[in-house]
Image (cartoon, rainbow, N blue to C red; front, top):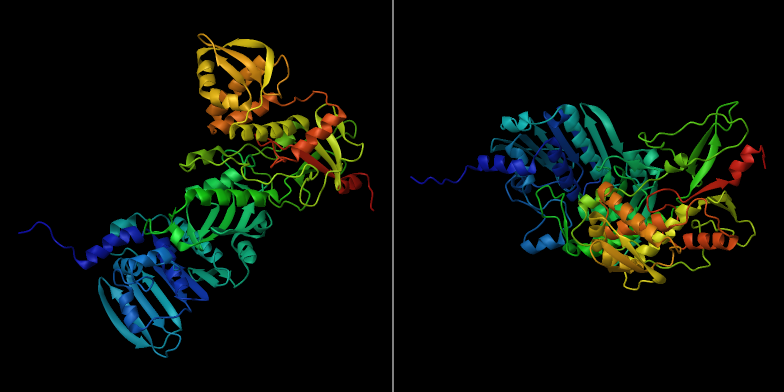
Length: 618
């Protein structure tokens, strides 16, 4: 007798169900997507016992004939494709023809369906591979009921989580699908209670419905059409950070997907506006030719592969960066306090609107004791609360191809066009630009006064300049009259040898001498005479520190280390012409608001705040 046997159909369905139906949420996803493919304008989802007892999805779509309904729960039965080539032109959610077959194999399954142009519908019950058919009058569209999920697969049922956990997965999927179809109405009932009721609306209103007004008021719109992709959506402002990787919503042709490549493109575009452990909330809808993306990677269809990953990556990165650049990231200083202590605390906000979200809970906001005299100081600790360094987690999910230079292919600003944001221009043609304690630069803007940290501003300038040199082959070096020899310990010598090609691109003219010695013949023009040895050693030390703590990409790390150690310091005296030049160069950079490590370069003190403090009413 042969040892090899063909499995019975009901066993095959139970095995296949393991891939398609992992938990109640999987059933909700498959049924809702089928309803959308059916051209529905409204969908109701009814849940009981977190989907373990009942899942029902009813729509007002096209409905099915009796013949189609009988075929619908057969394996590999689908109306979405008829030939293999159709996979490259997919416009629907479903196409495998496995979902209903798998679901009916592990539940008590019912279909009630009636076509829009017919008066009599079909009611089919399926249990353990057998079915019964009845005719009757039903609501137009299709209603599918799934009872006692995994009743005949007890091992799978025992592995389901608590009702709260399973319900969380269901609601997340419901909201993701509803978010991408604002032109449709969605309702969800949980144990006979209506918990979601989304009416047909514009996408902005759907975002507010799904995430709340707090989120909708804390995002920046993104929109760009290119020959390859069209991108629309919303990006979190720097004041609205998340600790959860799951708060990123990416849709390809309105299908919710997960893509490490796109996530990395978005994270890297935020450059220094997020710190380690923080993730930017975003909702992005990418529309592209279905032939350019493969969604047939896994039965869940959550993973995708792109035909041209590098181009998609670069375009998304550039579009996100452009959208963020349209938003004024300059913090605003305002002063609030209790009665009798008007200057006891300082609040940092945004000039264009009230930020509803508080500073993240893991930050500590220092309180200030009442001063003896009415003098308000803004400490470095306060400024450090505003922004912090770039999220190093993105390195872990970086695509295999090289991350593009963050300032590559960006239009250069006209030297006379020195903008704080799209609507506010620095007033540099007045004699009022002064240095405060050789640390801060004060200069007027249309809405008040801008306060710039001179060291951090110079860091930003040097960082972008260093990156441009590192991504090109045209170094500028200042030759030393007397070359200087440095003896390094073996560890520093190893690092120096590793970085030698990159250091030369920055403008360091170095020669390896005997043993652990190197000779400096030239340095970048920014390095002052007499500081060549100290600066190089400081750069190597900072590079090693960043390498251990932040795992930065080599060129980014070196540019950060170089700018940090080469920039002018707090306390360095600058003449007025140098102050003006520094501000001009700052606003010629692509991201003048934060330094390479994420600290704010400037804050604004608006006239309205000054008027309020001086009791001026008009």
